[in-house]
Image (tube, rainbow, N blue to C red; front, top):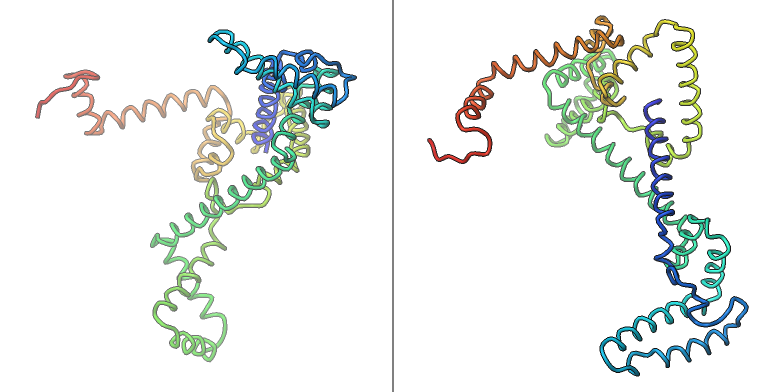
Length: 344
């Protein structure tokens, strides 16, 4: 929970920081008339009527039309002026666009409001609707993907003889204790009427149901829950942030100021943080391994550092004993990296 809240908070501040940096980078130069004033380009004022703006535009358009100028430089300069005049007229001829432009002139510091107003009008669709649809699509994909992962995990356990045989044993036990011989015989008679393919499918469904009810799958392949969906996470974001703040304050008060001993939950949290694992990754570790971590007191930083060095040395030793790694080291010693040879 705390890791999720911290991650969401970090992304939120990062997004706001990026937007602020973009805003102060004068991204509004790309909107309307850029650094120029649309009214000044047309030679009118904010009090001018639509007729006066249109009349001034027609006069300037005739003056700066590229076809009325000769010479490459004059023609290019006239074309640039003509484009600026046309852009200014597009902004001021429409009442809604002109209102948004006047709002920008009066409130130059309202970067996000200008951004929203400009693209809402350009796209002819409310930006809020786009955000809602986008979040909904992401949530749907997220939910379907999680179910696919869970289904993959169940099918994998169904294919393993260890779990399949255990499920068959539980099915037989429940069937034998469900009723008398007449009930079992009735089931057998009903099953004989099914084809082999249907019997096999029914058999697999029973095994799958037993595995789903008794298998506790953790990590990325765990059974999806509605609270993991993006929409629900955004809805619960204030609550999640509040819990994170309370959790941080409680940690600081109990373990930093009062120096109280860590409980099991805090010990596991410190171990996971030292290992730099997410909650999902840490939950995927076998329970026996986690208990071993606790027995070794890896929540103490010195113990964890010592354990990490031992693990790295053990890994190096295993690689050194690996025949493939030995052959690779001999090759690197004889030929070196990046050298192309034609030796057999």
